[in-house]
Length: 355
Image (cartoon, rainbow, N blue to C red; front, side, top):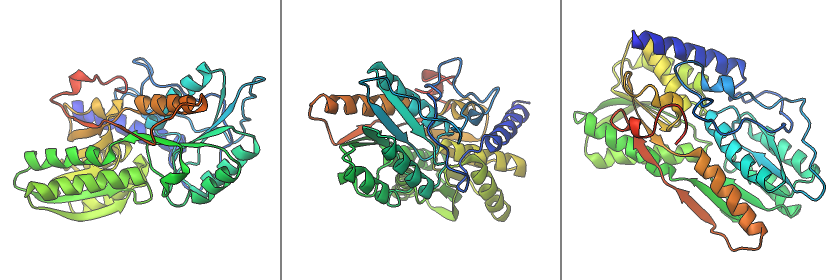
């Protein structure tokens, strides 16, 4: 009964994700938004039992105008790879809270996983006169032309969650230990499947954070000495709907896999829906530690998630930026701890909000 209920919820999640325009690469570039969704609270966090995470995370409207900054305040720019991803909704909310507490204005734009759109939007924010940029790239190398424009305009850049191809552009960077987030998943799989078997990997090669997680996962199973065979590895673009489509095809060709690794939690959710529809039950791992994934750990084939804290990342990089603006020396690289959440310890973190 629980499985049917969760399957129904995931169907709703995928439908609302599609309607919200989550993760598409070819849509029109959204303009700057009014203050976006704040970090989820216990009542508002994306939860699996009722609504899909994307339902609460609406993409910025292409029609919206940038909020006017009050006299004497700064305009701060923000760009992330996918503004509809609940992880980035929480992270943006944490940055916004710090920015507004300083009396400044945050202008957010969502490129919807399109690198060219992200470059265009950054150029637009430069023309709007932003004083500082928070940057999370769609493509680590593809964003370099935009970073050049920011550098030429003497706009300081602060990175978060995913590294850019040349870190020398950034004043400071705060992000999860993504390699470890994947590694703990691989280690857990090897311990739970000592006999090994065929596995699937749903990655996203243009996203450095996902690449690091995938590398960590594969290294862990290699070091375990257990024989796992990667029989399918495809780019899910970090998107739930794309992941569902890729996993459906891969499971049709490889129905006996023992596990699926997804580069983030939306990818894991897409793989879960595909496996459930196919009537198979591989162990599925994701990375994020999102409320919707945590809610599924005890009663489904979702086995674990390499957890991170978007709220900590957002607050850390925003506070670092203001320290720098105040003339303080700041660290160039600030790692944020990652760890594994499974059915065994999920109660320590709760399922109704981000940790």
